[in-house]
Image (cartoon, rainbow, N blue to C red):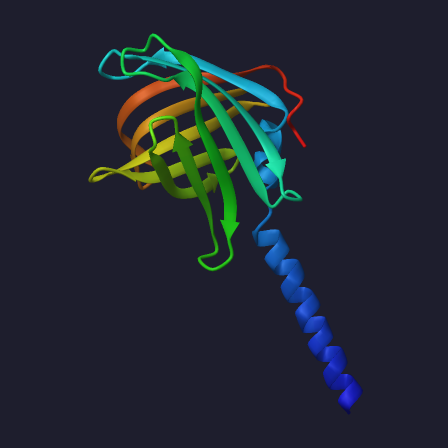
Length: 173
């Protein structure tokens, strides 16, 4: 009788571990890894947007690191490393979280949701809930939108451009 209980508990724990591993899977980022993504555009107020981002897995593929170049001053005359970010599954809340640290000393944090191959970053910016969406077009192209995305619809768009894979980066660990 005791051996049946031990076997049952072992099977239950094994299934729980498999289920947990599947929920924390970061494979939805796999297409972004090892490529240099570039985009240019204009914000709704007319200011320039220019960004280059590389993504890499780290810590045995339990996190994704994002490093971005962009304008590093208000006048948009200096360009360089602007943001370093982390994407990770949070087992406590059973959600995907992100943290983005910028050269100005700020940190943006929020949740990542997925619609098919689209990545949806949502975060508080002041009193507003802002969404950044990487909308999958093909393996080397994503439409990128920033704005108010509620109930699956864009209420307002502040920026709309495309990220294109420029070249393979050697950072795909």
